Amino acid sequence: MESKAHEFMQVSRAYQVILGLVQLDEDTTHLYVNPQMLESDKNKDSAFNVARRLVCQCYHLGGKNSAEDNSGIVTSILSNLLYYGTLDSSKVPLKIGDDVLQEVVCTLIFGFSGPTPLSLPFPGECLVGEASLAVQQIEKALREWQSGSFQPIGDTDIDVVTHFNNVKSTASKVFEVWQRDLRDKWSDFTSGIYSTDLNTQSSGALSWTIRSPLDT
Image (cartoon, rainbow, N blue to C red):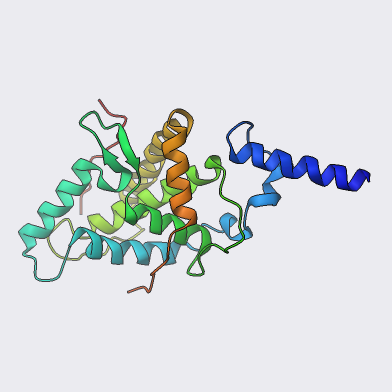
């Protein structure tokens, strides 16, 4: 009887976390977190390949574009922060995350297998780190086209590494604010990650500016 009562309390606690009534803690994490959610680093290369494919597919880079077209597309996307979602003129999100961000996050969490049908929805706190890493991966994939033609970006230049670490840190601050202050929109975003239909077959001097929707 005591065991049943304990199980009931754990499940009740888990749903309170999902509804945002209490904070995530160690006692409830195992009830709803798929083990793959803890493997973002393992899926990082796969997610970057997905980001590379999606920036071409969804943002129309490459193909028959001229170098000037490709460079202009990258500049526009980085300026408008398209992957952060649909933003108004004050950079307040009308919708958090576009299709590119959702699919990259889903790949980071689940790999190519996708979420299992019986998994419980994610509590919002679980996705801030994955969403921040996805922004980093998407911007890196975009920057590879910034010169107008595809130029892979290596990981040996300390300035490049520092830049993309700062991109991730900036994104984390943005998503923490949105998760805290825009619960309904964040819930829609996390639900979108959970229901994403994966289609993920993979295919010099630094002077970049890190942009954030929180900038005024």
